[in-house]
Image 1 (cartoon, rainbow, N blue to C red):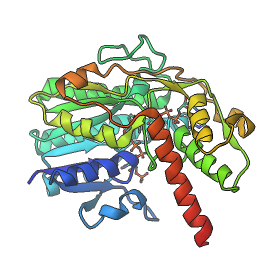
Image 2: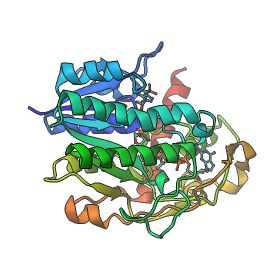
Image 3: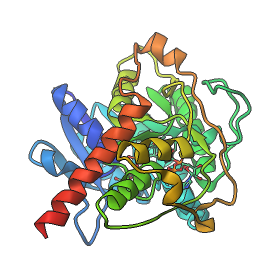
Length: 324
Ligand code: NAP
Ligand code: F7E
């Protein structure tokens, strides 16, 4: 039986990846940082099937203990300060976790067991002010936030440990992927939650920022398969993962409001607090390399994703509304 260790198990992707690997018969070790409250919400339903271990990306010793104790065959590094907007308020923390944290984990693998296969969660935010449309593995990076800058470091240190120490280290450059488990501060979930609240009479407005930003949005459940596929190849590499389509925040709003019979213009308020010091205007992937080498393609369409998220928030809020 293979053992997979996932940092960021309590996050959106960690929960979907754990489900996916359990179905593939892996022993799953989920890494959590210490917290004064429980952060199990997304993995509650699989807690009896996985092993939880404590470590923090800031702390080298905790990572060494982890890898020595569990001796994983594959390590998926999903832990990060993942909210771009917060990275301007916490640039040093973001760099410590998202950039140096990757080195800490790679150093641990180098010394404890260099045969471990390593996946790094890189991001389309590395393309930032895009130098090419669409973006592929060869497109130059131009990050536009402390988050993007830190992810560029994480990407290159992964490539560097592959080339310097022959570690099987792959970098997945994933475009935005969403789900009903997305954090409430990200724009897609903010909209699906806002639409559900307005529909149920719990709210009458939704404050948003730049409606013209365009993103290549896919479903997180589809994207975790690509992470696993990268570690099953004969050679490590970098892969762009996305749908190859782009849509604006405005379009997301239109579809989400329209789905429940409302017009977004009546409820969405432009709020300067939601604008960023520097914006990423347009992201669109060219995932042809991944389609060819990994045989990967997304399954859930943009419209299906919007509806899935609105339905889930309606169900969740209706349940709480009527059970209280
Ligand atoms: P997420 O929901 O925000 O999850 C992030 C995870 O990292 C959480 O489990 C969090 O733990 C953990 N974490 C944060 N700081 C940590 C620390 N110091 N030590 C240990 N764990 C720590 O993010 P996601 O959407 O699942 O994304 C997963 C990864 O993919 C991230 O690296 C993200 O940057 C990257 N990525 C995401 C997307 C996307 O569209 N979702 C696209 C490209 C790349 P707590 O629960 O305790 O906070
Ligand atoms: O913003 C605009 C905002 O915060 C998307 C992370 O998973 O994907 C994610 O980063 C766009 C931006 O995600 C609001 O200005 C408008 O242009 O949902 P977001 P993100 O910044 O694209 C990448 C690939 C990652 O790697 C990250 O970890 O939407 N926008 N109004 C808004 N955004 C937010 N959050 N809130 C608003 O009110």
